[in-house]
Image (cartoon, rainbow, N blue to C red; front, side, top):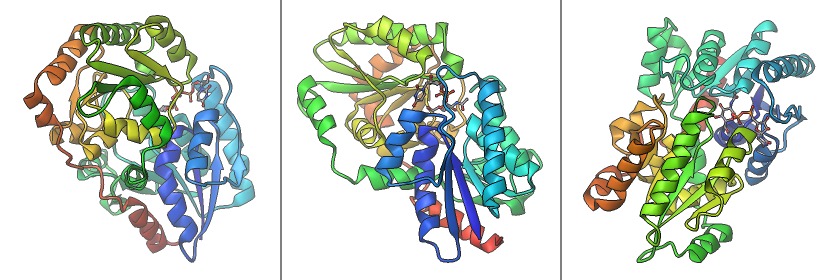
Length: 373
Ligand code: UD1
């Protein structure tokens, strides 16, 4: 049975890595990997970390690429890969442009499509944009749906997807996280924290990521204003560290607003290994990304989600995540509460992991074997 895994962005690569590794070790499966290169530099970091060498690299990233052009070029390029490889199954994960284009290409060739991280929903067409619609379209096209949680299964059932096509597997994000969090912290993290004076008895770390498309423009400016205020209020006590996504819509505003503030450190996008260890060291995470919302409950780090909606309410229910939107005053107030009130902090800082047990890749591969070619 030939299985082709397709991914293109950094988070897809992190989460698909355990699946790809498992496929490669499984007798009876021929595993092939195609990367679209939707994220060139950020993807390559992850491929190196997990020792994955793709058979095909489409290298499709263009500077400041537009969604329509990216979708079209992935669709036509993947079609050629499918024609050459003739896989029995195609796998893709989540809700990016790479996923929807891959799912469509597989459909046009009548090749079975397995959707990993299936069934996440905000039920808001514009939040997150364009991901909510990407994942809905992927669900329409999938032959097997690998859901992280029971809630994800319920979302799919409510849309009329047959239960026998759904498997609850957990999210392979947790497989990857467990593998990487158990490694020692890399020197780049320990050196940075030492230089900033962060550690037991010293200053506390606030880790930030912000790059979502629906936050581009004014919401991102409001978020950046909140970071400036937090930095001012806690100078000498707190260090803010923000690895900035390479998207020019994020790089420009982030550097314009935050360069030169003594307790804010802007970094290039962090590799996954240092990122996990920065998270482990953080007193508080402020983020609008999806992956950190899964990692925070697993690591027990209080996390404020700077979005209006979340497709991961399990983390809110577990108590580790709180939705705060992009309003400056609200972000500052919620962050201050967690920095000032040890009880409020402790009540959010419990590790309860709703997103998986670290065995998702095993279940996904077993389900594929059971289905057969
Ligand atoms: C993409 C996904 C989003 C995912 C996010 C994770 C879509 C529409 N969006 O958003 O779902 O959460 O990745 O990071 O699929 N760039 C580089 N080098 C890189 C990566 C990006 O220079 O390694 C720059 C390029 O100018 C590129 C731009 O970032 O054109 C935007 O990249 P793109 O993949 O279109 O969207 P993201 O905002 O990264």
